[in-house]
Length: 480
Image: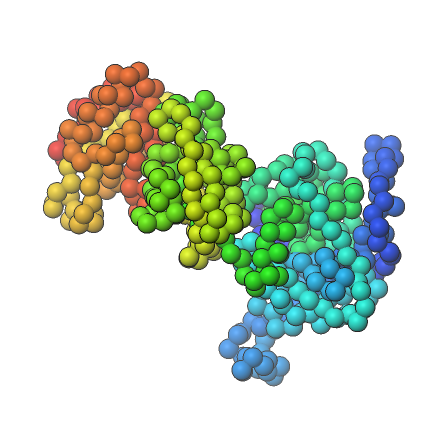
């Protein structure tokens, strides 16, 4: 692979810290020709940005009762950045900057070094909260409203790249809501401000001197990395929620819906009659979970959660994740060609957020919809099919026995052994059911037919074009 995503802009190298101290009080930036003069703003921000140096055990077995044996342990040093959000010495950084560290040192802009303690951390959100005791109030910065960011808006990154502390770079917001596939909640700000190893955990500022993101990742075509103008920051809106939870509870209490969902593609939108390509379609609902109790159904398209309009699956994860636990939340879903409002009582996510998030698997990639033949053969589910395809004892539906190369089904990732459980949001228990559902959709003039497919990863919806189903009845045979 030519390009490498470096989800840690932290650096493993000796530090060369440059101290640049000044008083805080953001001043507006002014234009200087085609560039933006931030010389009046930067000195007021620098004192709140810190360099972070950690020592980590390469061989954890060398630790004895929490103590490190310097004679037997192999250690390494890593560098990163952080920023002070409370004059009492509370610091925000990335989790990957301090992960597995047994010693954390914070260097202020006046070169004062302080030992830091870890307050709490979130591996999923890649954020951590540290605490230092300076014996005096420290300069701090405040968060801005990242929801008001616009592409093209100027931004400033300050941090400790390559150990060169107090470094400033500038650029613009290149894109919003970037998905790096690092978590179900990804909502990164993309910027062309230079971000390198060591910038991780540092702040991304707007021209009002407010933190609107935490610099976290870079994309580079070289294994060793380096800025090519593709940097990514966690938005302040998400940072504030996570940091608030970490400071109050020591961990993140995320909301839980209890539904598996997938991205709405153009095919799916047309198949269910959505006027716009938006929302997230429900694959499956956890029995007894909040979604099931609220009446959410497989095939519903979630359009809104509370006040948040849903553009993709990650938007659902974020909206549910921050919803008050034990409180009702309003869901607006698309069902039977109309919007329906449901009320769900959000519960706390019971599992491992790092594994898959609140019932939100990665969205499938959109697939081309031009093909002549569906390219599928089906068979009823009987004892022989259960043995051959290792199906569960109570599995219902019809099983796919073969997929023609380069067909519509092939393009959409269908494989032998996949089970079709529903067609057009109606259960399928036999080949006759399959034929009836497809025929009914064709009679109504539908352009697409929706198949609920169970594979090794669970359930997902597949929109099949009716133009590729002209001989689907004959393909529903008794075998492969």
